[in-house]
Image 1 (cartoon, rainbow, N blue to C red):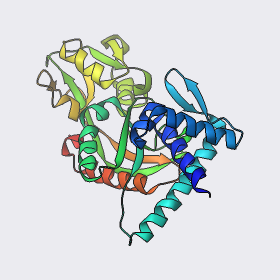
Image 2: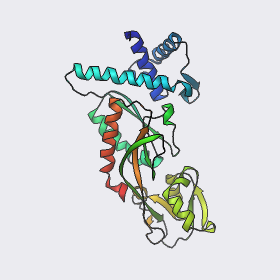
Image 3: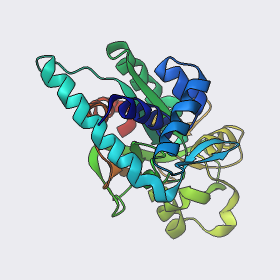
Image 4: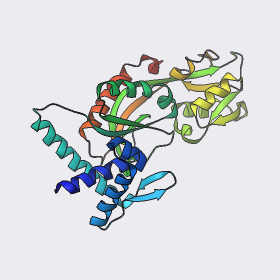
Length: 283
């Protein structure tokens, strides 16, 4: 591979991983015009278009995913050359995108990012907060941290810990419940509520545990919440008689077709250890 091709490839990878020319430029310590020029040069050289330019950023086209995977494989090879040439020392750099729920991104994962950045100053971590499952096959994220009974067939991973959920309310005498909508209908709490809570006891619903937490604190009903959310809110009390404590595995996973870079493997390994050490997750 010619050096100029590899240089252009670095810029292409940075845009694919950040979804933004400005963020890619910041990570590579260049101006955004340089990123645009290098991406355009790559696309012109191979007579292809890699990204859809949208108001939300640069979206990798679905039929170009294989190009980015091959680019990741080339990056892994270059990193291995660097590691061997430097006597086997591991130096993490590049960008790793982690997707998780709004609750974990808000209350838990920022501490992980701070800890890993203190050790690896050349490694960039992007947190993507979403209760829906991002399409990892289109490189929207490298790693997913998700509570789920089991992973879908197109993902592989490791259980870091068990996430505990319980019932909470502002008033222990509360009888109405707050419902779960959207992606939360697939949760273990929703399964239990479907079997045990009559529809006429559900007055309001939401698709976010953080929204349910706020509504429960205002006295609108009983909310099924992750214990690390409910236990930290002085406005709420846990109601063990309203719902049994439920647990669900918390996975650190990636897409089966993902090319695991050195930094991705390192972040996954440290994520598993970090989450296993967060005792509040298990309630």
